[in-house]
Amino acid sequence: MTEARTLILHVEDDVSQQSLVRISLERAGAYQVRSAGDGDEAVALARALSPRLLLLDLDLPGMDGVATLRGLRAI
Image (cartoon, rainbow, N blue to C red; front, side, top):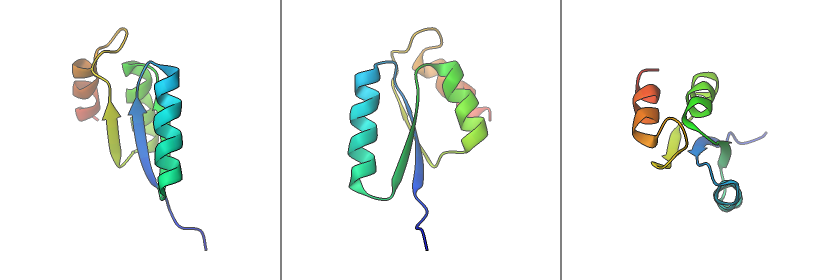
């Protein structure tokens, strides 16, 4: 039987940071990490995937982290 892994949505525009966080958390154990590069993508992924945890960069291109958080809270 396969153990369910906790889904984390990581919102970060720096691709190297996305990779570092994904590798670190997935190696740590029962986590699956999906990454979004901007606020619009984060809101769309959150709607589709219903992550259990959000890691959000505040300095994002376009919709900043605070506006992204507002959009996520509205879901």
